[in-house]
Image (cartoon, rainbow, N blue to C red; front, side, top):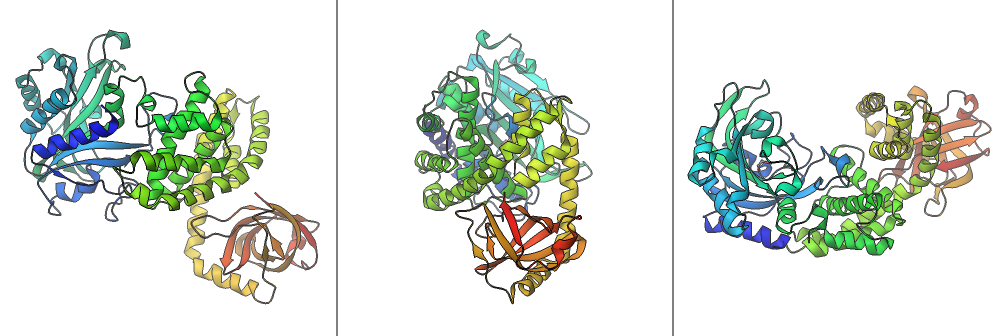
Length: 549
Ligand code: SER
């Protein structure tokens, strides 16, 4: 079965069982669900129905939901199955059917629609915990469906109790596994934890609401929430070792092969780069089509990180950064039928990805130079310091995972605790600055701008210029606002953050923290080097070398 046939077969089966087919909700969760940055499961958009806060359009629903999980983002490309973006097939009952029917549907769809051999199906059920009994009811229903008791295993909270987050709807679950045979490992069922037994479907008996103190309250009704990863099903049904060889991913890998002139399946490092491009190609296209734009916070940062990682893995294959937009077309062509927003948003997505890739490409070269220095000096200690990792991130926009990748390739560790500490400090500083009010900054910037000529922006062609500072005004905390005659710095706006860089000259030096856009004009926010005593006066007509990073 092709990926599209599996998706359609699943949804049709549940329509025949009286379910309403609902379209996938956006990857950006509703505003009233602050518990997640991105939609992580098919049940997420239905949460208010489970909680009894809203009336569902039908008590039985089925969907193929766009999902995004960042927990294992660093594993993508290194394993057979880790993905960031994926499609989750699901059926839902809001106070309608419960365990019996959910299990019957699970068994019927597995054997009749997907064609799995019942002899190869293994089951896990919840073994119980304080306040929630062992799920003997589910176990007996599976026995009734014909699964022998020795192929049903009990597991604890970590495996067989599902929750959307620390609080909210949750409940015990039963999972369906497929035994891929002795070639994949020893016998013994899912409890062995090997790749021989592949989990392909999770049926959650959603009956509790967990509060912040961990207590479980009973939901207004007993509900069903199930989830089956479409990509994993495709790998099983198409008998592929990894999801990247299934028909859904093949065109993306083929694009990477064609663009780079390299073949998939001959070199492990090349394969990893192509898998990252395939996963991240889908991820960035779906995220941007749902309106996410690259940035420094939350889900915006996830998109930025995804695009930047794709740029650097593409660079490993010798691809120019802007070539990445080619992946958007492959994704829109391949998935546009099921997700029309990909086609509708195609040109905006291409612009978003292209602009971020280009911006990152400009910094990648300088960053790579610094990275090499860092690798050299870290060799004896065997670890890249938190300071260095932070500087790469902060000054050069190098996401931590790129530093981590490079470290690993050189047999080094990264002091991630140190890095996290510095990130935390920076966030605190940013929050404190935010509290002072962006409006005040802007007003001050307008004051600095008035009275000197409009800055000539040359950033599309030049990253370094020699120019003069035409106005400057000291601010609190060692900062200053300044204006240049000619500037290579891109000002924030249009979904992009502003450039960073340096100003240096005889009178001293300063770091460019921010570029404030004022119509066609701009003002720089600087951190003045403490030794640069003369930079705050007599600035006019002194030449400065200005570097945009
Ligand atoms: N919510 C459950 C999961 O994500 C079942 O859909 O696995």
